[in-house]
Length: 441
Image (tube, rainbow, N blue to C red; front, side, top):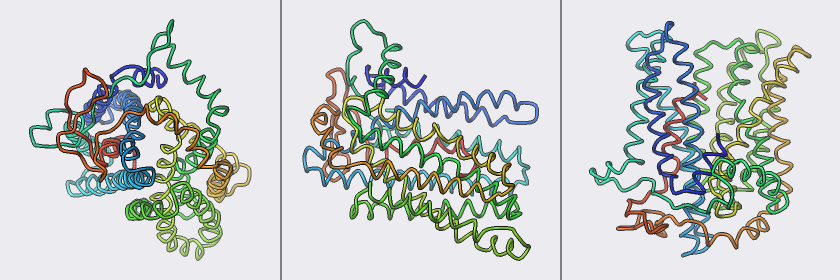
């Protein structure tokens, strides 16, 4: 369905409506999942499928706004000012993503503990709380009704970016466009293609990290659930200041170079970890459990820095006119290989009998993904898309990155005046709603 949703976003003026419907759907479905019990598990499982689809489609809609948030600033004050604002947007978005995860874990487990709830009841409490929160965020940044409180930071309507080709429908256009993009990207925008290859490999490691790390702690280090939870919380908490620090690093060295350095850093730290964190003896196992918080801090730095850097880099080098399609392709690439590290872990673990294989698989993905990154020439990549940027929809924002008083979206004549979004808006709902689908990391 992604190609169809992408085609609707790019070829119609329904981008905002898709964001509204998917956000509201996530809230309602998450609330409904609060009925989870031994008798309703099948219903809740079916609802989870709906929730995942809504979340995926929502990401496609809200990510389409991301490249536009600095378009007017680049036109008014130049590339350097736009790059700094892009760094702010992505670093703050990552900060709030991890912050909401930390707060949710603490609040849900805290409430469950206070009321003496078991695992199932705690899950029900968590779903109810998250559902209410999603609906509140929906009302705040997707609904015009929030204007009543004087709130001026929400998503705007957008006109269509291009017409449906003659003789095609939205359905056929979406699938044909994806096919032509995949086939033509390497020829027309080879550096975008290289970046996506790197994203597929490295994000596979980040995506599988929690699964493999938790398995490693339980079976290699004999860690109990309390230690596992503490380690996850440490990693998430450390990622918060790291995401903010990423902005400073991006301003000084550029997001692309910081992304490469962070990938190398994560690969080396993860490769070294099995030599220090192992359970060969009881004494070694005890030492490993004591060292785990230190490694959680180091990994947390990598999580906090990498995501804003690579996303900022991607939005710098994609051509205008197909934002939904290309951001959808980016989102697809972040997930498409997430199965590979766990599968290789299982294969090597059964072959060698070593849990260490899991961490070495992750390290290999972190390091291999650097290869296509190193083949990318950022200046040439930006030059290739420079001629397309005039057609990019502008977000009516001031040069300071804040909402302008009385700004009006003039993308099409049919669009009405709307309140403008601030630098946090593009990521805020993604940050909040992601919690409905995650169990910790």
